[in-house]
Image 1 (tube, one colour):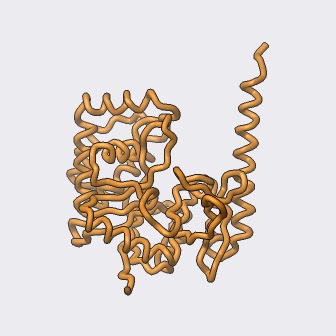
Image 2 (tube, rainbow, N blue to C red):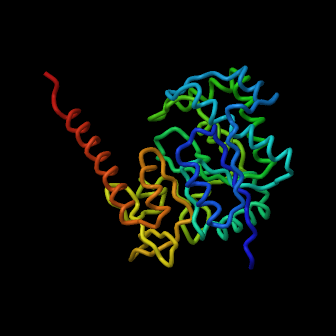
Image 3 (cartoon, one colour):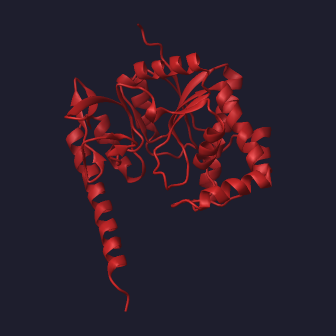
Length: 301
């Protein structure tokens, strides 16, 4: 079977320091990469409607959250103008690898067979607020249209918005309204949106490179960061099975936050250097958390 190039949309405001790596990786993996870096200038009637009713409750900046939401409106406009019906949307810190193309085509085949609208990444503890991540997400044009309609209704319907906020606030670590929270709400109300992390796959769609576990799956890691290896130029990780650890292909890596410092090393195939950088970040995170735990345990005078 010949793998047909999937369309990858990378939508940002043109200020990313790492979009060049993400773009090269997608192209190297065989995808049709479309970079829309005009987010700051984009506007249409749907966006103006959303912006007029939007209520900012996030701990992140207003400009950041609006840019995150605007991506879907830009993607909707792109599909309307070009007729593209299926696409992968990636963040500028998402790296794709050769095994991703075949796995991505299989994902879209499943979506067509099951009538799915979209596939997003969900990796949360039961006690946490429900949210979903679009850093590497699979979309149909109907899906992105449906989600845009959902968020437009959510921000203009005060009762619906308040109910969503109240249900989220009782959970831990809720940072306020965001596109990830909206994606989670949309997913809970729509059984045609699925979690790509629980889909059958012979490889890894990475939620976050600094997480050693993804729901039920556990990977060899050091201080939380997955340990990267290579097989014939294809990055791999070791996944723990019932009796042993098996090497699996990495379809994507999400180099979120400070993990971006390892992107150029991964691109160059310098996985040992990347592992050292990621381990150092993991150690710093572990040390900070340990210090906080000790500080909380010491009685205050």
